[in-house]
Structures are given as C-alpha cells and as structure tokens.
Image (tube, rainbow, N blue to C red; front, side):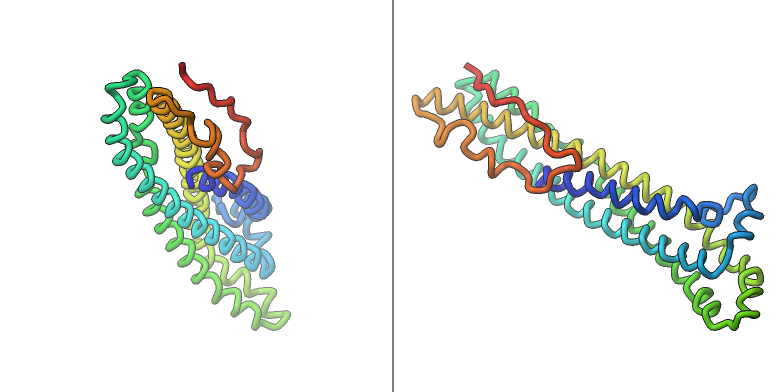
Length: 250
C-alpha cells in the first residue's frame, strides 16, 4: 500500500507539469502583478478568460486528486499503527533469544513521525478546493454573459468587466502556489512512508530468519518467498529501484 501510494503521488508530477505549462502563458492574467497590469489588460479577452477558467478547473481537479491521495496516506498510517501494535508482541517473545536482531527490528517501528502532517494536508486541501470552486463560480457568469454579446458588444465587454474578474484572478495565484506546496508535502510523506515500509519488511525477514534458525527449520518457501506479493503494483516514474539482495544475519 505504501509503495502504490508513492507510485501514484510521484506519477502525479506529470499532471502538475502539464497544468503548469497551461498556466505559464496566462501568468500575466492569473498572477495579476500590479507591475504587469497593462499586459494583463491587453491580453484580456473572451478566449483568455475561457482558458483561465479551464485551467482553474484543472487545478481544482488536482486539488481533489491530492485529497484522495491524502486519504490513502491516512490508510497507510493506520496500517503502520497496526504494525506497531502487533509487532510489539513479536519483539517481546523473541528478544530473549536473539536480542540484537529484535532490537534492530524494534528501532524501525518508531513510525509515529513517519506520516506526520497528514491531517494538516487534508485540511489545507479542503480550503484550496473551496477557494478554487468559489473563484471559478464567480468567473463563469461573466464568460456566459460575454458569449451572449454581439460583435460590437463583445469588443467593449471585456474592458468594462475587467475589474469584475480581477479580484478573482488575484485570489487564484495564491491558491495555485498553495496547491503546489501541498503536493510537495504529499511527495515527502509518501516517499518517506515507502522507505520506512521497505525497512520494516527487511528487518522482519531478519527476525523470521533468526526464529527459523533457532528452531532448526528452513524459512518456509525461502527468504524471498513472499517478495513478489510485497512489491507494489504502481511504479513511480523512474521505475522501482533495484534493491540489494537479502543477506541473512548469521
């Protein structure tokens, strides 16, 4: 689950880059910097307003996608908490036989901080989605009214309604930057969770190996018997890193 979550989050970077490419030519309008106000006024027309509303819809969809990712991260956190709860009994039972390995495993289970920030992430995304929805809804009536103008009316409609949409544009850019910031946080949390999950799995295999060695039996199916099942199905953009072969501790 942690690996699949990281794969989805990493792949979303391509979507962010695509939306960023759409935003770039509209930046004078969407960023609404006072120093570039004449440039913004000169490029303001029905087509650019339509493009701005469309890209706001894209960013709104990104926010909703991030919100779903935060829900998955919350599920990963719940799994980590269950692992900590169950593994405590395992460590207690085996620590008397091979203490070093048990302590090493226990050290990997301090997962309390592994997914810090999920709640704040979710709340911030809710605010972004609400803000973008409100911005889009305030601009759509202007575009619809513009569509109803005849050729002469359309020529003057943009200038007369520029102030009406200016405030909405000025609200968009902070929301876009906030969305990018929340995605960056999602990446950090997701990558950290995947790294911790791999570490736990490796340390657990060491405990299992020592337990089987102590009882005089072979590891059922071999050390790598369930590796395929443990592998995530959604790879990050660069693919999965080649892991070092498992080396049992003697």
